Structures are given as structure tokens and as C-alpha cells.
Image 1 (cartoon, rainbow, N blue to C red):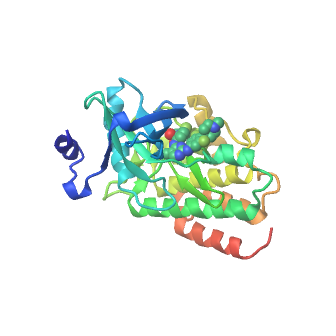
Image 2 (image 1 turned 120 degrees about the vertical axis):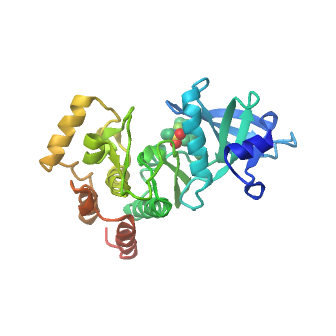
Image 3 (image 1 turned 90 degrees about the horizontal axis):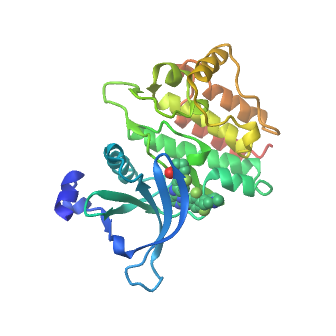
Length: 299
Ligand SMILES: Cc1cnc(Nc2cc(F)c(C3CCN(C)CC3)c(F)c2)nc1Nc1ccc(F)c(N2CCCS2(=O)=O)c1
């Protein structure tokens, strides 16, 4: 019931999250499925006359109780974030008594950055790519101000709200950095997207704002290659490849510049890919740099 729900999240009444009643949540179609569970498009239609709002509902993989605690942490994380470049939390929906729960978020009709750039490649120029990059930067700056590390910053986790607004989604791997440390160390690497990982995340499972900056560099590369997979590394993780990757990174190999990528943007990517985390720029300095590139209308 509501009281125990509020206790679970040690929320007081005035913070009462919107509780969505399952019987009014009408399934429309599946938006995506992964090892996290699935995300569905639903209409929340309490009046039953199709005037209700469209929402994106993230459901936990059924009967994976272990994930329940993680999922509750993810819900707690996203419900504490208020930033126009982060997908909006709307509430939760209980089902099967209290056994299962879903995360209700605003629905962004244009889908992920990957599908959007593949489909709209023709009419997205480098100025618009820089606008998207600056917005992702702003979202990451906000996340850092809340002492969160995202740990899974990639174009597939960026959603397109409109042709001039993108938002960071999916906080399934997000962790809070302990107050007395500069990084978060994970114990179980799990299925890691190593091509988006900084070297120290691969070798020492260390995650920090600076490892998020490394991933931001990969997102810049994805943006300026319009998320064309042949130019992008695959999301695969096999231990031997991981160590091989770290070795060539140590020898200063980096992803080549995407086709037609402005040299100063490639230079920014290389800065994000400094081997030593303390040599990487901060999100605030990246944001400033991108802003000047947008203003001066070169490339
Ligand atoms: C919170 C949220 C809000 N709006 C939306 N709109 C949305 C609208 C769409 F047309 C699509 C697609 C576009 C392409 N065609 C072929 C199929 C539907 C779409 F994928 C999404 N999606 C949200 N979440 C979400 C959905 C789906 C996801 F796979 C993932 N994830 C992916 C990696 C982890 S993840 O869970 O972040 C998050």
C-alpha cells in the first residue's frame, strides 16, 4: 500500500511520487528490450477515453528478484534528477500486489540518437551535432553536481525529444561516488560495453566523472559518424579483447576521425581520450568549448 511504498523509498508524503494504477496503463507497443528488462509505450488513460498521456514504462525482467533492488536504486536515482537534458521521471506503477513494479517516464517520440541520426542523416549538420553534444554535456555536468557517475554514456542511451533537444536516459548502471572518494569501483563488471570504457574502467573497474568524460568522447565520435555502425566499435566484451584494447590504447592508438569530422572536434575527442584520467577535460570546460564552436560558424 501507499504507506509501505513511501517507507520503501523513505519518502515523506510531500514528496509523494505519482503512483500509476496498472488498470489505467494501456499497453501500445514495445520500444526496446535488453538485459535490463523492457521499455513499453503505454497510454495512461484513467478516463478511458483515449485522452490520457503517452508514457514510456520500463519494466523489470520478470522474476529476477536480484534486479529488484538494483531497479529500485535506478528509480530512486532518476526520481532525484531534475534537468531538461535528462529524461523525466513521472512515477511508478505496482503490479502483482507489490511483487513487481515499473518505472514511468515521459515518452520521447523520436527514439534514440542512434536511430534518429541514421534516419535523418541528410538534414543534420555539424552545428546541430554540436548542439546535441552541448546538451549531453550539460546533462553530464548536472549529473556530476549530484555526485553521480553514469557508467553507460553511449548514443544508444541518449533520446531525442525534438530536432533541437536530446536527453540522457537509462540510469541502470549509474552509481553515486562515495563522499570521501573520487571514483566508484565495481565488483562485478558484468556485460561491459568496453569500447565505451576508459582504460582504468577496463583494468581496475574504476569509474569516475573522468571515465564518463572518456565515454563522452566516444559519444562525440558516434555523433560525428552519424552512429554508422561500420565506423563504430561493436558493443562486445570478451576479456582477451579487453586487455588487447588496453594495450593498444597504452600505445596511443585511438579511433580515427570520422569522415568529414571538423579537426577541432576530433581534437576534443582526443582530449577526452587522454590515457591518464586527470589529463582529461571536465564536462564544464568541454561545454564552454562546444559553445564557442557553435557560435563561430566555421565548418
Ligand atoms: C524513457 C523513454 C522515453 N521515450 C522513449 N522513446 C522511444 C521512441 C521510439 F520510437 C523508440 C524506437 C525507435 C526505433 N524503432 C525501430 C523502435 C522504437 C525508442 F527506442 C524510444 N524511450 C524511452 N526509453 C527507452 C526506450 C527503448 C529503449 F530500448 C531504451 N533503452 C535502450 C538502452 C537501454 S534503455 O532502456 O535506455 C530506452
